[in-house]
Amino acid sequence: MIASSRTTDTVAYFMKFVHEWNPMVVPKCTMSDCNFPQINGCSLWYPKTLILLWWHIIHAWQQHFVISQHKQL
Image (cartoon, rainbow, N blue to C red; front, side, top):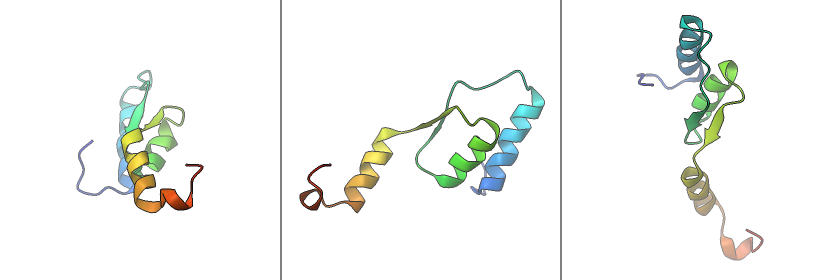
């Protein structure tokens, strides 16, 4: 999806448009890079299809956790 505004409303509008254009088309997955507007907008119309990209999750962990302080990680 390409949009100048990456808000939940914009993403949800796009997903609603796809759903209304052809309700028989249900994506097997939607992918996000931990972008909450994308996650929320997609989940409104296709709640069971979301896949988060592991690289982005691991990168976020590395930015926010000090491994020496959280050895269980």
